[in-house]
Amino acid sequence: MIDRDSQRSRVYDAEKLVRAMFDNVASSSRREVQLHGSTITLPIERRFASVESVQDYVNRVLSLNWVRNTWPEAADPVRVRSRAGQAAAHYEPESATIAVPPGLPGRGWAMRELVVLHELAHHLAPRTPNGAPHSSSDSPHGPAFLGRLLTLVSELIGAEAAFVLRVTLHDCGAQEG
Image (cartoon, rainbow, N blue to C red; front, side):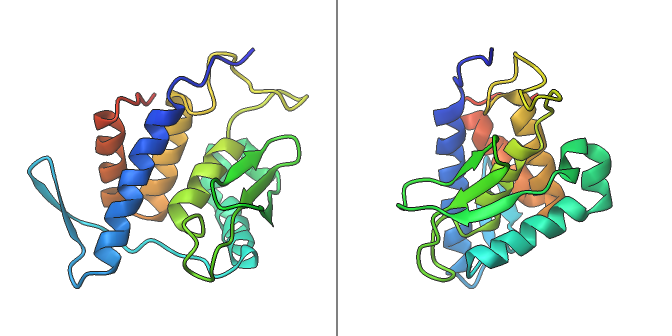
């Protein structure tokens, strides 16, 4: 049995703040943010124009040697599909599917790298042969999930992005493994 997902709202709150930081610097001539007295230059976050471009990105990430060496689950393909409604993106473990609300090309809130990496972090969770979570103590947004997410963000977007996400998660009360 999986533990209650007690960190879910904290993780979502932190990610919403980080997405806002990326949005703010994307519309500015400067890419710097101030965080706890430090000035951080945020790297560029990829945005996607279509569900097909998200699928291409996911395929490329899962084919990276370091990703396959770190998480055996990366060998399992992921399907990306459009999701009705604009409220949320989600991962469907039964079918290894990421569902994203497409919004307008390049402008949908979920059509961005941070959201796609969040969903991929769910896919990369260890599973038993029957597809169940490997650890009954790892909730969907628990410490192990955050470890996977922060590794993906650090390696694919940049260490600065992972630092901002880590600090914001901490500020929102989420605990990583």
